[in-house]
Length: 224
Image 1 (tube, rainbow, N blue to C red):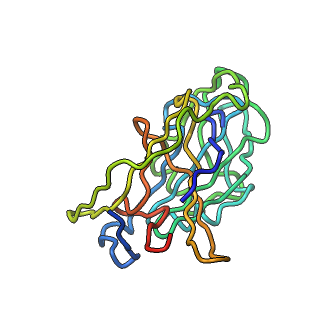
Image 2: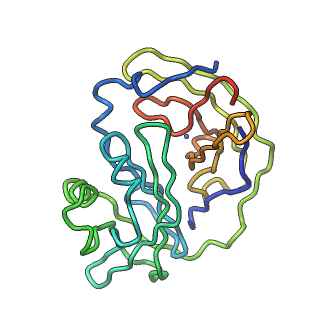
Image 3: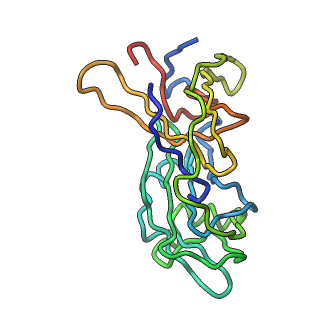
């Protein structure tokens, strides 16, 4: 596993092998989540990470640049899909960028575009309309840096529902409040093996990689 020197600014969480069959029955429900968190702030040059789990992983993986907008009572700003990351199972994320910068101090909500109406993400947002942010001033590009090399922390394995098995790694940054996450990559050591990348959230100076309950963004396995 290696850490790419890519930190997505807010201007912009023992080894064991687990498979989809290990997911608890209730894990297929899932839903949508975002970084930044709802009701927080969004820099005008920012990004939104939309994550789908369970039944919403597929719709997020299939999202294109015509499906979502940031909207207020007076404007709609289309959201361009910059990147899609598909997890090992039950997880996918789309990194969304407004096609133009909103004004600071605007109150904007995630909504479906005209072409996205009636699709699963639209139905989920309509059912639970909580994805709203207040825009703030621009954040400078390249302002966040590693201050220490990532190191391995504790491992944790639990068998209660939902089960989990993950390893924690340090993510020591000079301005952690300005990042949405760390782009981590896991790859097999065999020549030509496919790698998997996912933007992992930072919680109290650590990220977690492995089976985190009902979803697995990045899988740890022998030979990786």
